[in-house]
Amino acid sequence: QPGELTRFLQGLAGSFASLFESKGITYHYTVSLQPVWVQMDSDKLEQIISNLLSNACKFTPAKGQVRFSASVTPSQTGRYELQLIVEDTGIGIADDQLPRIFDRFYQVDDSATRSYEGTGIGLALVKELVDLHGGNIQAESRLGSGTTFHLRLPLKTARVGELPGQESPGQESAALEIPLS
Ligand code: ATP
Ligand code: MG
Figure 1 (tube, rainbow, N blue to C red):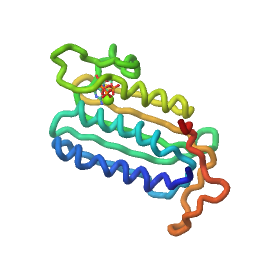
Figure 2: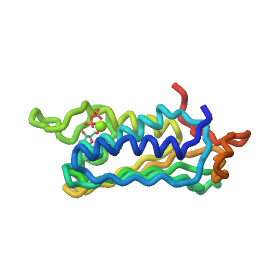
Figure 3: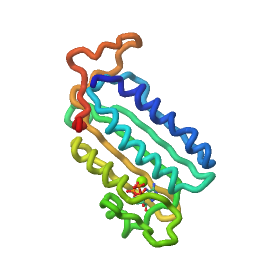
Figure 4: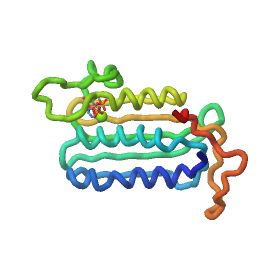
């Protein structure tokens, strides 16, 4: 479905504010300002972002900070891509565990005393959706100080920076290549 990506991302990012607030986490989000019309599967994009922001909330204690940023930039191939960053000051992940976090059912601590809910499928799903889309996801982390996820999702021929009021996607609208089912 054609849609305007910037407003969608602002709405989605904003919808997490109360969740972070209720846990006493400072939350900042930045979404690049120019309108971008894309052919997008907003459900899939929402699943990707929601999983990462939920994890950031779950694994960050009160008084921590979470940042989300989204921007559309020209890629090396001359096309446009969506870049997402989700950064937290949470518990972090040890170097030897980091390569496994995208594995299905993998959880860093799966002991009976584990204090976090979940089943360990969120990041596996995220990785699957990003891969299907021809995108890329990377995690950096330091145990005890926080975790950052960087994502890049290719956009076909993006049409960006239109004047406000021009809401027609036109022929060259971009395709966010997340498959529909
Ligand atoms: P589910 O997503 O199915 O509810 P989950 O959150 O435990 O369960 P994933 O989202 O797949 O599972 O994450 C896998 C594991 O990676 C987590 O259990 C946790 O150990 C680690 N992890 C993921 N995100 C973070 C983060 N932001 N900070 C610290 N650890 C994380
Ligand atoms: Mg999760």
